[in-house]
Image 1: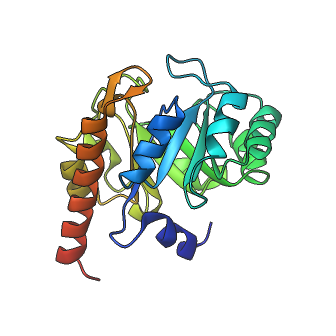
Image 2 (image 1 turned 180 degrees about the vertical axis):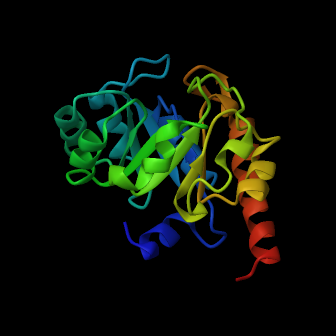
Image 3 (image 1 turned 135 degrees about the vertical axis):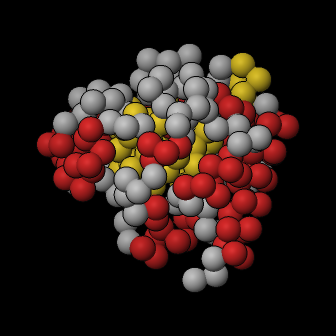
Length: 223
């Protein structure tokens, strides 16, 4: 992924908004229609787990520019690449304890690669060895909606490669963007009515708050 591709994915205001744990075509289209940059589909065991065939049907109906992300946890690298390339996903997110070698193998055969770590994890310092384009920092219990101490994400990486997740909601996403100035933000439970079912009002408020904060940050830091 080049710097130009990174910029194109964030739009004019410079923020990448990923709505994760999507389980229906309606929710995927709603998120994109409200201004999300990406939608994420979870293939790991979870209340939001999806079958590859169901995701393939949804992806076909999304606008071409949508960044579609497959989320895997400790899956066999070959299986990750097979699913991603068969469906035509633009990115994969590795959300387990994948090794440097396995992550690099996937990254060389799939689209964009996002490597996730819990906040404060010792291997974040080794992120450059993994061969992934983007680093996602999450709480210790992914999908739980638990907020982590944002100080643990300060200075861990060039913010232009950082996605922040974990406990984000419409009420706090603006503060997270102002505090950490990340490339992107990621949310699942914070915009749900129930696990796997998105709440239209929360979706609208979250995406709107993220873009508002990004525009404000850009205006105060025009360089």
